[in-house]
Amino acid sequence: MVFVPHRTSLPGVLAALVAVSTVGCARGFTAPAAPEPAEIPSLEVRAASAPDDADLLIRLGAAYRGADRLDDAARVLESALEADPSSDGATFFLGLVYDEMGADSSAVALYRRYLDENPDGALRDEIDRRLTLARRRARRSSVTAALAREQQLASAPPEPRTVAVFPFVYTGPDARLRPLGRALAEMLTTDLSQTDRLTVLERLRVQLLLDEIALGQSGRVDPATAARGGRILGAARAIEGVIDGTEAEMLMEAVVVPVTEGGAGALDPISSSSPAQRFFDMEKEIVLAIYEAVGIQLTPAERERVLHRPTENLEALLAFGLGLEAQDAGRYSEAAGHFSQAAEIDPGFDAAATLTLETGLLANAADLDLDVLAATGYSEFGGDAGLDDWSIRQTTFRPIEGLLPDILGRDAVPELLGQEGFVPSSSTIEIIFRRPGGDR
Image (cartoon, rainbow, N blue to C red; front, side, top):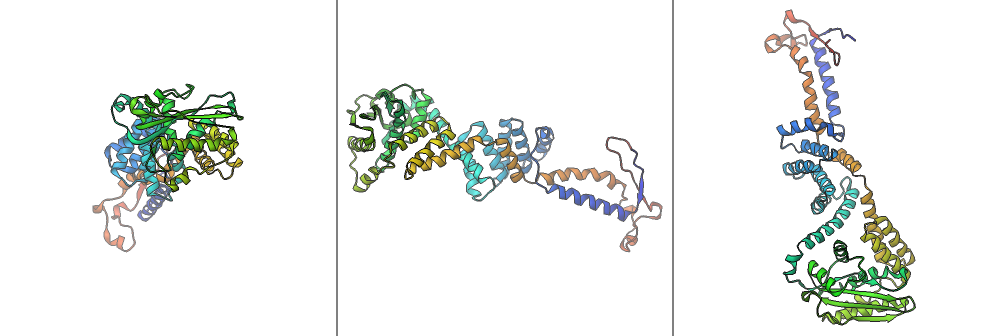
């Protein structure tokens, strides 16, 4: 198709230019589209000439992320956040990239920062769920790091009055009762935390360590193993034990192991034996004996808190133990189902209800499509990339501008009177519209 040159007056040209400019600006302020990896070369060129343009760096970082170049994305987004520390876009995308890289502590810090600065911000729920998951992974990273420094930690004195409770191991013939071992460890951890004179390590950290040193399936954590684990975790004492027997007659036995002596000199076992329906009575006998063994005399208020029973339903506790097993293994949807079942069996079992919600959030976080999250995040935090594109598009009008006369070729008097501003020899301009991809 051949475009025939048209002739028009100066006011018509200016009106046309204004109309085109208005359309271009309107398009520039629509929600910016998520960048494609194909844009990377041009974005790199532009970023090289504008290294402090946070919006441009966010776009380049998002494009790198889309191309699975996470190291490059992190580097560019760190620069974006440095250029504009208040940028929600840089905070969000850098946190997301750290999350995908497995830099969990850094991801936690940025997600937390976004939520603190934007309590009602976009994507709050999604970011909060990823924060919960990243925090959990960060615990594993800290345990892995501690294991790598085991020799160094062996020479460091443990924190006084710090206790690590290891999962109890069920050694009886009824496999249905196996989850009670992990449930008992959780109950003891809670009850031993009811005084500020004793610091009890989080049960999850202890379990993560066992997973790292492949002792979770070893049958029984003996005193030497408990001492090693306690030393790595910085505890002065470790508590380990077994559950044996059947529902008709059950034995519960715990041992307090001093970590500094490598397990030697462990206190005599603390034991209690009764039918399984008295499981909760046995647990209270054990925990009170542990307090006595470590030299802590409880106040009446502390004793009342220790004797509180989160549930008295053995079936609910079994479902709770299954939930802990699934949660520790990272099977969050399954864990939520078990915790929900425990809460249904005993509606007053608050710990089960709390963990139902927590593991449900973890399951949702693990199932989030991060590509969709990134695209949604770019539509919210992508900055003024559209305006930046307009600054480039407007250069396409320069050939038209070149057809306009400079100040020496214009007559100001007719222009003031609303007439053509050209000298008589230039009463019209010729504008040639070129066919895209063609010559004329």
